[in-house]
Length: 114
Length: 110
Image (cartoon, rainbow over all chains, first blue to last red; front, side):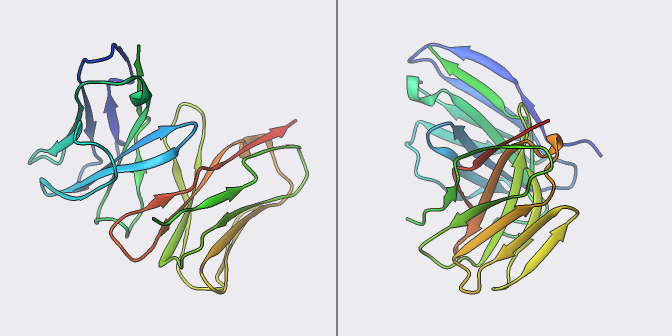
């Protein structure tokens, strides 16, 4: 079966702009969680969505937001970009909600903020 | 805030050698997972451990969960170049989140 698909794979933005990243989960998976990965901080949890509802949120400012659609596809948005937002953004889908079950990760969207 | 410390941060060894990497916390895990991430890809689940003292084997990889459920180790026997990657542990501390460690970057030299 098709894996988790993230788009775009790479993007470059400048400070102050906003960005929207998309994640299509594995068919049948209703949970989508998002993570930020940087060399210094590792992989940090952003938020989780299940059945179009945000279940949990990590310790990130309000500039980071997300949503989930009725087909389980999810988007995350970062507004007023800062240099420190440069990172690999990963989404993962699973059949059940966190923390149970296996997470299936996409290949990520690599964001560079100039 | 629960923290997961992984050690070593970097490890480079020759093909055929054995190695062990560690994941430690000051808090008790409800469960712990190990993932491997290869360059340009997302992490892939290797194993989940839930019971203190549990040992699981996956071919040449042996995973152990500490008796007190505050630590875990991953031992690789006869390492191969295909084992190269970033090894991440991810722990659940009884809430609805997974906390990831900062990872061990492993390089196997042919």
